[in-house]
Image (tube, rainbow, N blue to C red; front, side, top):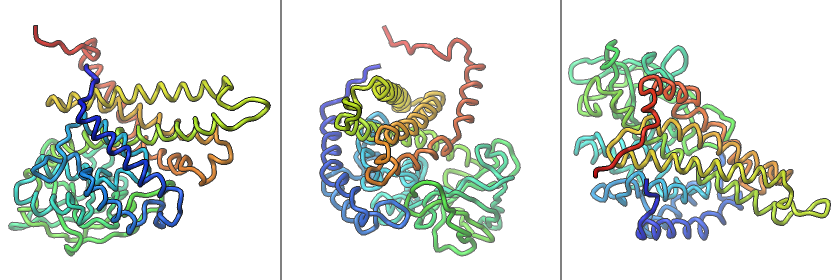
Amino acid sequence: MDFTISPELDALRARIADFVETRLLPLEADRANYDDHENIAPDVLERERAAAREAGLWCLQLKPETGGGGLGKSGMAVCYEEMNRSIFGPVVFNSAAPDDGNMMVLEALGTDAQKERWLQPIARGDVRSAFAMTEPAPGGGSDPGMMLTRAEKKGDRYVVSGRKWYITGAGVAEHFILLARTSDDDRRGHTAFLFHRDDPGWHIERRIPIMGPEEHGGHCELVFDGLEIPEENVLLDEGRGMKVTQTRLGPARLTHCMRWLGLAKRCMEIATDYAEHREGFGQRLIERESVQQMLGDIAMRIEVGRLLVMKAATEIDRGGFARKEVSMAKIQVANVLHDAADVAIQINGARGYSKDTVAEWIYRYARQARLVDGADEVHRMVLSRTLAEEGREFWSWETGTA
């Protein structure tokens, strides 16, 4: 693998870095720039989004014909990492979950009419979106085969009944992608639908309080009690819901990792800066072997995560699925993000536990990383199954042409 990036991509990365350094990092220090759920306040967000558009840094993950920057997954890995040096970065550049994954799946699988109706408003930043799949027990979580929400075909419409929960962004979303069961077929029993916030027949039961800071719109529980969805709002085809899910979640897991690497690196900045200046017992913290061990270990593990992310991104850019590569990256990066925040807090002591830095924000946010888009245990199970299928070929080298 060649890890060299083009001068053009590096110039784009540098422009993002300058925007984050000069515009976004200063905002984090003033609590007036936060909303009630510890994310960037709406008025500040709109101002910074306008600046990102003006700077040509908007929606870089989409194709130019869709209004984006045309980055492949490898380019996204470089840029998303830089964006999330700030906790406000991804949403400012319109690269934050869940809109990021929803836009990419609509771009990949939507009809021209669906792209115009459902994708373009998200890409412009006019509306927010949500992906409604996870259900409370005994419904579907990591195992979609357990899904209980049903969409019954009646004439040219589908009538939906059921319940979803922990739906990220649902509180402010206008455009929704919904996964529901349309038959009991093991392979073709799920269908993906598009619906609007104002459609009758559903409601938000509650915004679920969580441990960490929240994305805009929170994590909500939804109840469907007669939502009617017309045929033209089926995404892909009836019975192809698992294809939609796979198309969305694989890259979305990877883009999570790209962003999390930026946060992990930010934690190392916070830790290193304090260790270089804080003295105790006649020594700076950075001179203590115990501190060096902590910083060195996290630095190495971040780099391992970067290599796994770039390997998976390159495989997807080549047309592959990168299932095992994405699973490995997801486990590695989710865990190092949490540990990087923990080390930053430990080295900073009481300052780290306070809100004087964003380390505590990242620490609370990081705990969800080992759960969202597949818990660690699920991804390890995927890797184990792949190992059983591939044997020694699990670690094979890609061979070029002579």
